[in-house]
Length: 116
Image (cartoon, rainbow, N blue to C red; front, top):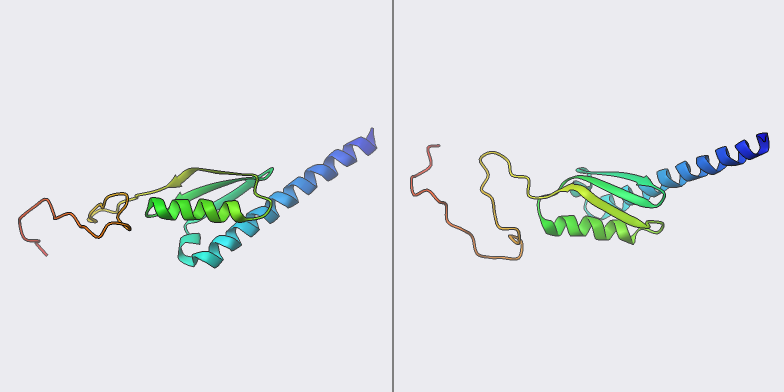
């Protein structure tokens, strides 16, 4: 019975080490491709599934983060449900979701001059 519990413990330890290594590889891949973006992304791994959370500015950045994560060897699945996009700060002017692709800008809704 003791041999079996040692094997189970060994297998669990191996799985934890693999998840930690996978998390490190994903974080490194993100940092190498886009250093400032990688600082805002949190990565957790469990059994080959990588969970991403944090904030990005555009849908394109979200897709880029997921694509980089999928490209890392050992990643089985990517869970990006907690990866938030389009986080607007007070005082900023929201742009359309495809703002990076569009050269057209919307005029401000108010015609009053700024009170700066």
